[in-house]
Image (tube, rainbow, N blue to C red; front, side, top):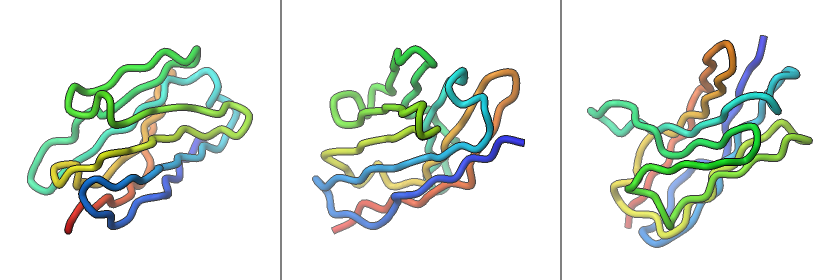
Length: 114
């Protein structure tokens, strides 16, 4: 059973940076499509960024140029580097693994506030 564990969330001021990590157990990480989603209070969960097994990336328009997704297959870990954070980036961020199954992490809170 694959499990995902996110870390790196916290409180940051507008304009600041955070790096989220998502560590996966199991042997399918390197073959899987990995994504970060977020869900703000009262809103639907939305895709933030995704990265294929080969390293191709895609981003939501709202984070292009500010966020970078990357992966380290040797460490079974995907990262989300978030720069120039805005108040509207406040949300719970979830890691997602997709291969034949669809697996979610427990989420990590990111709060951008002055």
